[in-house]
Image (cartoon, rainbow, N blue to C red):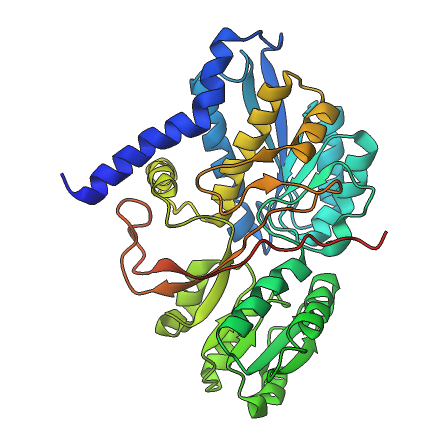
Length: 406
C-alpha cells in the first residue's frame, strides 16, 4: 500500500474519533427527550452566487448524516431544512421567519453575502435564534449589542486586510494597486488599506473605486498601470474580482501577485489559465494540508462527485460546532446554544483556526491563510478533474478582532 493511502486511512480514523468523541459519550448520557432537532439554512441556490453558496449545505448535510449514523445527539436526530434566498434580502427575511415560526429551527446557517446577512441579523436578534455566516464579512453586520450572529469562515473586511498588510510587509512589496467596489465591503477594504498598507515604509498605494456591478475594469486598470503594482488587489470588489484579474492579464500587467476575494478557485483557471499558477493569491479558512481534511474531502467526492471546497468545508465544521453545543448544554434552547458558542471554543482539525468569539460574534482567534496554486494533481480522490492544487504562502498572526463603533 502506498504511504499516501496509509496516511489518508489513518487520518480517517483520527477524524472519526476527534469529531465524534462527544457523540460516543451520548450513549451513556441523559436523552434530550426529543426525536428531531431542526437547523435551517438560507443559501443562494439560484442567482449569481449559486456556484459558491450551494456547496455549503452539502457539507453541512454530510456532517449531520455522520452524526445521525452514530445515534444523533443525546438520542435526537438532526435535520437540515434549506431555503433559497435567490440573492434577495426580502426572500432571505421571509425564509428566516418561516424557519423560526413554522419549522421551529434552533439555528440558521448559510448567509453567503453581506447584503443577505444584513437583512437577517435584526430578525435573529428579535427572535433570539442564532445565525451563522459562511462568507459575509461586512463589519456593519455586527454591533456591540448583537448576541445572535456569528462569523465562521470570513472575518470582517478590516481583519482580512490585516493579513494582506502582513504579507506586503514581510515580502518587501513596494507598490500596491487596489480596485474596490462602492458599497460597504469595498469601502471598508479601501479604508483598511489606507490605514494598514498606506503608512508602511517605502510602500506606494493607489486605489480606484468602481461600481459593484462593473464588469469592464479597463478604465480603472489604466489608471493603475503607471504604478506598475507588484501586488494588484481585487479584495475590495468581490463581484468582479476574477473578471478584473482576467482583464489585467490581458492588458499586460506584470504584477507579481493578484489578490482575490474568497472567490471560486477553479474559475481562475477557466479565465486566465496558467497565469493563475503561483500568482493569484486567495484566502482560506480551511487547512488544506491536513490529512483529516483530505480524508473528509475524499468521502465528499465519493458522495457528490464534487470537490469539497471552502464553503462545503465550512458547512461541515459549522454542523459539528452546533451539534457540540447541543450536546454540551443538553439543551435545544436557541438562547442557551448561542450563549454557549459565544463563551466557548470549538476546534476542528480541518479548520484553520479555533472558532471562538467576542461578545458580539466576531472571530476572536482567526489566523487567516493566504494561498496560491501550483501545477500538480490534487491528493488522490478529492478532485480528480483538476490539474492544480493549493499551497499556503502566508499564515497570518492572530487577527485583531474588529470592534464596532456602536
